[in-house]
Image (tube, rainbow, N blue to C red; front, side, top):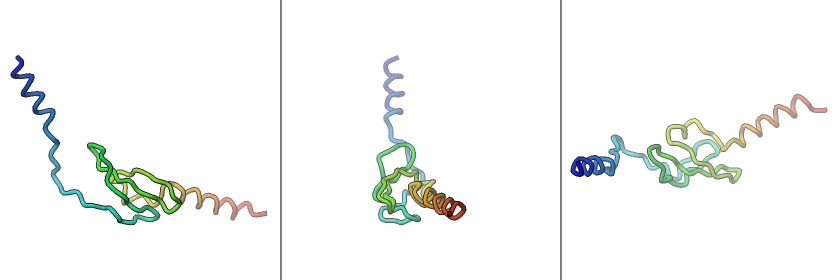
Length: 88
């Protein structure tokens, strides 16, 4: 019984194989975001990014191509729309 337990434990401690190479995105720019480094988060690949406004944000690799900012761009656009329609 302990031999079976040892085999299961050994399988659980084995590292999960990566089937594709991870592209190092350090220094890349995506919109207002600059990628600083990869974060040690499993199982997803997460990057620490800095927005031009100064905010730090963690973004999953699969979402990085869709992110333009930390959220400040959305609030700036909203403020611009509001002032356009409510100018007095």
